[in-house]
Amino acid sequence: MTAGWWVRWLCVQCHGYKVPVTPAISPSIKPISSMIVSLLSDRTQEISWTYEVLDEETGAAYRATFIISPQSRIEYYCVYPREVGRNVDEIIRVLQAVQFAAATGEGVPAGWHPGQPGIKIEFDQAGTI
Image (cartoon, rainbow, N blue to C red):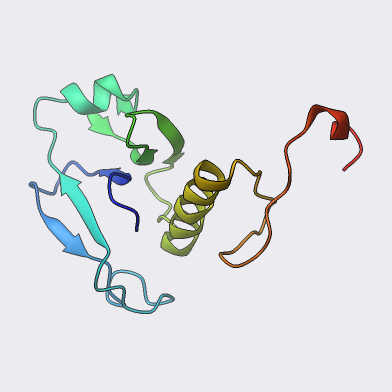
């Protein structure tokens, strides 16, 4: 993972831990010893409110993932129903795609994986692809 990119997971019951992604967390992926996921607690609800994932009726945060660039720009976010787990493989793929697009200036088609070509982004191609 390129330095400076963050995957932020809002998790009310975790308390500032950094957890490696392992098969115990996501059985479908291979261990990634260099990938650390930050989990945090939001006891004051300030973070959940700021990121607009706070259910004010229940006081609980929705499950949410944010990919934030080194320039502090939200490049991707997804809010999940409380009953639905996150797809770690897809989050990693999206992070790699966002990093590829930032590095090359090319677009990334649906289903793209590292090593595949990107798409040139040009106005004269609009409506033709």
